[in-house]
Amino acid sequence: MSSNDSPSKPKGCKRKVLITLGVMFLLVVGAGAAFYWWQNRPITPVVLDSDEQRSLESKVEAVQKRTYEPGTKAITLSEREVNALFHHNTGLGDKVRFELASNAVHARIRTELDEDLPVVGGRTLKAKARFLLTNSDNTPALILDDLTVWGISLPNAWLAELKGQDILTNIGLDMSNNQIAAGIKDIRVDHGKITIQLAE
Image (cartoon, rainbow, N blue to C red; front, top):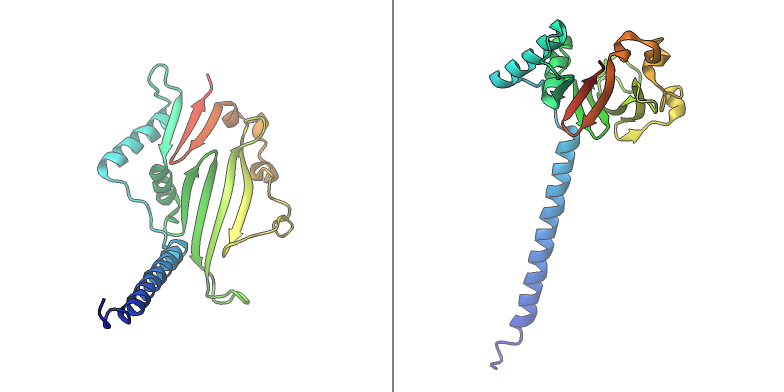
């Protein structure tokens, strides 16, 4: 071994350590940037393509006219169809986005607050809510499971003890003795779709 080989080893080790640290730093920065973008991603209205629009229109027509094919007693809507319908009827598709999860509906809200509001005026409100659509008796309901504002899950006391309560009942709609509810046998929410099973 020549005398020139020995000093190169520590230099080579140091270079490997620096490269490893640099790669790790880039990975951490990249992950942080991706997380920040995901948390602050804009909400854009869902626009269906022509095939999706025709499919949705046929489902809406079937509900309005009650012209179901023999044996068909279920209405299934995709997450995109739910959001497109919501935007079409409210114009709020750029502020609210629904995500269909397992046995729950998540609502993501992003909107600019009025400048005149104290403390938070002019800020962008970012909130997430989780709702359950049936109660323990499998009756249609709208139960607030959780509400997160700016990444903080709000205490139930701040929400007038609404967590776990059926909001429909609280506003005076008794779904346990209701003609619309009586016509619904089951509501099932899976990832990306909601299925409403109709009664006989």
